[in-house]
Amino acid sequence: MEAVLRLVEAIPEGRATTYGRIAAAFGTGPRVVGRIMSLWGGGVPWWRVVNVHGTFPTNVRGEGVEHWEREGMPVDGERSRLLLGACSVEGEWLADMAAQILSDLRKRADS
Image 1 (spheres, rainbow, N blue to C red):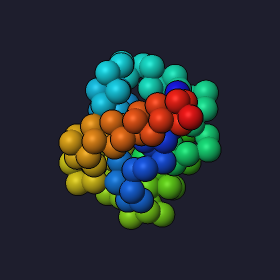
Image 2: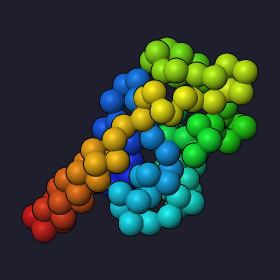
Image 3: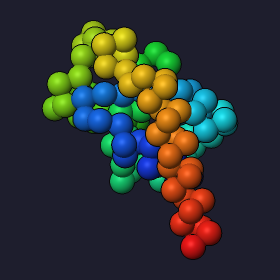
Image 4: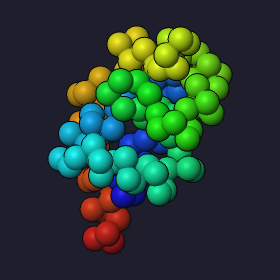
């Protein structure tokens, strides 16, 4: 859980990724990431994580779009979805960042 939240915190302003890409970086499934975000993601920039279609669950969609606009992220206004092709973080960056976060957490646990 903490590793996923740290990765979301590390996503630069104006950039985004999907639940599935975060899941792949940690070797888990997108539903696991979605559940973590649903339960504990309120304190991190949750609007930078979307589903594969570039949208959120309907209960947070309006608020999420406001965050995207504030950060200058490209939005398809008609469909209320993020244009991921124009602002997605690279998969390699996600994998490297996930590995670093896991390493840091292991070191902290060993201390």
